[in-house]
Length: 416
Image (tube, rainbow, N blue to C red; front, top):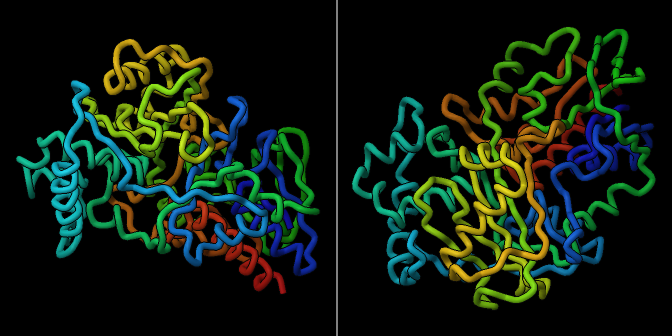
C-alpha cells in the first residue's frame, strides 16, 4: 500500500498496516517526517513550530505515545497568566475572571436553536453588541477562540465552531520535543522523502498509480494524508476527479493559520514563573498571546502568537518585519528598553507549499458531515486521513493519529 504524507496520520496508518503484515511505502514531499509536528532546536532548546501541546492527556493516545518514547511532560496551567491592556498596563485577575465567565457563558449559548448558520462574529454582534466592544472580551475571543481554530471569527461557523470533543485533563507540553514521540511509529517503515505527489490515477479494477515529479508508483490502495490546505489548492490532480461530495467538502471546510515567533534573549525580561501572557492589541489576532518557556525548559525564550487574518498577512512579510512587529508587542508589556532577542525562529505555515495552513476549522457553511465524509473510502482503492477528516477531533494531533488508524482499518477491510 502507498501512503502519501509522513505526518502522524500517515505514520499511524503505516504502523498499523506493517504490524498486520502488509507491504507499505510512505511518500513524503518534504525533507522531514512528522508533518505539522515540527520541533526546531536551532535555539539550543526544543521549540515547537507546529503542534505544541497534548490537549487533554487523560486516555489520549498521544499521551500513550509520549510514555512509550520516554517523554518528560510539563502540565501547563491556563490560569497561570498575566494580561496587559494595549497601553501595557496590567489588567486585574478579577476583571479577567469575571469577563472570562461571561465570555464562556455567551459562547455556550451560541449554536443552540439556530436554524441557519452564520459567522460567529455576526452572532456575537447581534447578541451582545456592547460586549463585543469590550477590550477584554475582544481579547478573549481572539486569544482563545481564534487561537483554538486558527480562523478569524468572521469566518467561523457559529453553529459548529466549538462542537468538537476533548479528552480530559490539563494540557501538557513535551519537554524534550514533540518529534521524539514519532520514534515508536517510524521504526522499520520505508519512507521516501522529497517525493511531492502531483497526480493520482485510481480505478477499482486496475489499482492506483501515484506520480511524483520524477517517478510513478503502483499499488492496490492509497491513503492520502496531505493537509487540507494542499487539497484545497488542488496541488494533486485526481484521475478521475474526486466525487463531487468530496470536492464540496474540501471547499467548505476551512484551513486556519497560527503564526509563532520564538525569541531567545540573553536575559529574562518578564516574570519567570508566569506561563502565559496576554496583550490586548488593537488589531484582532496580532501578537496577543505569549508562551513563557522558562518554567519547563529553563530557557529565556518567549513565543509570540498571532492568528487568523493577521497571521495570514504577517507570514507574507520578511523575517525582520515580523520580528520588529512582535517586539513592539513585547515592549508594550515589558518596557521600551527590552532589547531585541539574540536569536529567533518564525513560522510561515500558510506559505509552506506542503501545508498551506495550520489546521482545519468549521467554516461558515460547513458542517460535521463535510469533515467526516473525507474519511469514507472512494471505491475500493483510495481513502483520506488527517485531522481534517474527523470532525470530533479536528485540529488536533490525536485527531490526525486516530484518523490514520481508521484509514488503515478501512484499507485492510477494503482489499480483503
